[in-house]
Image 1 (spheres, helix red, strand yellow):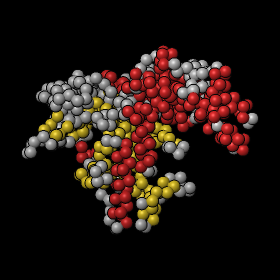
Image 2 (image 1 turned 90 degrees about the horizontal axis):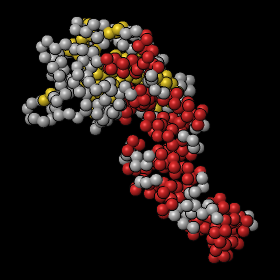
Image 3 (image 1 turned 180 degrees about the horizontal axis):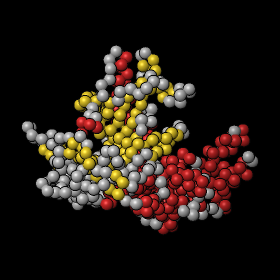
Image 4 (image 1 turned 120 degrees about the horizontal axis):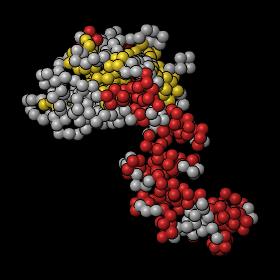
Length: 492
């Protein structure tokens, strides 16, 4: 398949054997609420406990146990709705969604159906090529997670771990506004960033804190929507892209061969890079929704919403705009820095009272490169923002050169310490004494008479002389002084 962008539609089309196709994508993102306790019980939500160690009588559906709503989970859902520029519903209703799995002790899931806590909103998404588009959010509702079935610990039996049972989830449902796997990955990336900034979900896909159900259909450009298939529980942004491309190709192939698409639920197999059928797709009536009789409608007033809104942190779009306007960074650099809240926080500490562009270069290049090489997150950086700021101060003061600064960075990374004290102790100060530098320049010129003649014909050879003087000074000579002296003595 060849993906092309058509100027008439501005959308990406897939070329099949019989013509062009458009893929239509919507997403249902399940985000685990950041909270200490579960949605309807006081059991811990901590990850990694031994099986069935974080289970209350409510989670295990013991007779007579009644759910009690966790107020912090409600607040987290409202904060998320506000971050998605969505309508907050002052009254919402919890429903029972009836289905039967071994890891669902009640035989139903407490969720929200017709009256969710959050209504319509929008997310603005930026693509790497500079294109910006908006994805509509249809709703956000609260629901409890199921447990986990374990099939690989016994030859003939499956085990059930209920540690996740009852953990609060926010299901964020997008409109079918996405038209390519790249757009879907960019949307999920942006949504994850927003959740992490808000502190309402840690976004850790490896631990299952963020999972996506991806709805995919194809159609001829301009035609009505095709039959969609849902790809369940995709647990990485990369796999989301692969699953969409695979499923779109499968559907186009079926239709072009004269077949029809059945609405169904499918799974993505990363090893084979393909989707496979899981079950026929259930409709809402199959779940026999009805209001949960053990839970009253959830109500709060506008003052409660306003108080949460007033305490929201600065969100990525606003921070990116501020980095551009206040610090003079390019939109690209600002985007890179705000993509992770910890990176943006680190940069702001380094940039305080300093040249912000120089600070951005050090954070994005030297620091990011070293972190990537060592497989570390910025929170685990051996160099603090204060230490990196001091290194930049030493450059600005002329105490060290840019080259010495890189050597100093490596020393502090490996051994720690105050950068100023390291410079003093190791004699790393830049040589600014023009007399000392001039002596080195004279030595290099005297030792290379042939190149002195050649540089007059080829002035770009000056760089060779600069390199020789810097080598002789062990990198400590002031480069500007070296250049100026060489130009004067060589008559350039």
